[in-house]
Length: 432
Image 1 (spheres, one colour):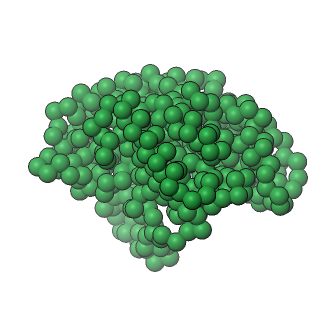
Image 2: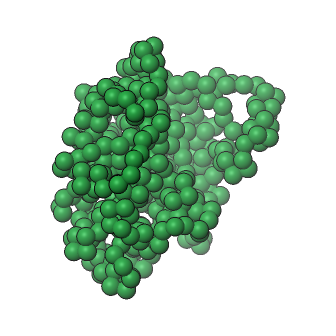
Image 3: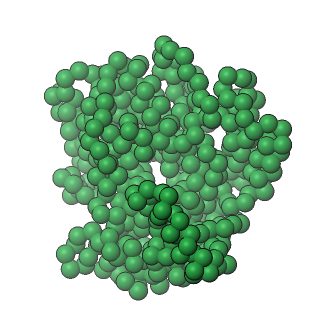
């Protein structure tokens, strides 16, 4: 893409697409193809991809096993809907149910994480006959009207109108807020006390707590391990369901666990688990896993026209098989551990960096203005641009004015690529 053609494409984009449809970079990229952990733009520039289409290209770009499965299934039948028996959907559901850790699990497929969370909220409110939802501060669960209504992140909440009564709970952000100065045990105790106090004041029984084990759009923040297990004990006293939003944390990305909830598993698995993004390696797959009592509580008919599409299910099966057979969770733990230590060593000397956090291949670097200590979205934008110039694509986010660099490469990242990306990031950070 030469400059004139690029400007023309950007102009066409602005003419027919919404103003609020965000684009990265002062000169937006048109990505044309990818392979492994790299992508190329229309000018032929190659980039090391440390964001994977927002944590969606989970295994690798152009993974042969997935592209072959998609091609072969498309050659047989592309679409049928859930009104007919669908072998790839049943096979993937069997594997996901078994991996979920939820006893007597049932699986419903959607086309996105937003739709998955929307479905989970429908199940919980119908099962509990309540429209009260507990959500975490700084949270994000999707773009639908219902999901936006429970979002605890002002930057991603365009309306306050909702059919749900949302009560926001402390605990999703360890390093900010009224309990930030406490030790981990004290932090959990304070958050549990806050939850009990809230439930003692709310009229009616809440349907569910929905929580991301690591907050994605919120800047890869997380509580101490065990918080949601402690919450679960309180929720069980009231019959309140626990929904674990695994759209970004699922499938081994955190390295230590296959699901994010397992860091909080002392009180058992969640009642409902939602997933999307990485399972399709770029194909549109989302879904909900719930124990049968909850999943089957809807008393009206329902289908999904596109959820469980034979082509996307074939992709998901091939992708999941590759991930498990090549132990990409273990790779995320090993290579991610090396990467975070390298980044911490780099950032220890940089006053613009407040914190390097995360686990596995889900890492965040929070930037501040060294003179004021306040979040610095300008610096985050500048580092994003400088990294791109150096040949590295990363993301950004955070509940405090988008001041966090989000790093989430495909789980097949090599040690050499991790070192290369860290070096480019070091140069980008020092340029700020």
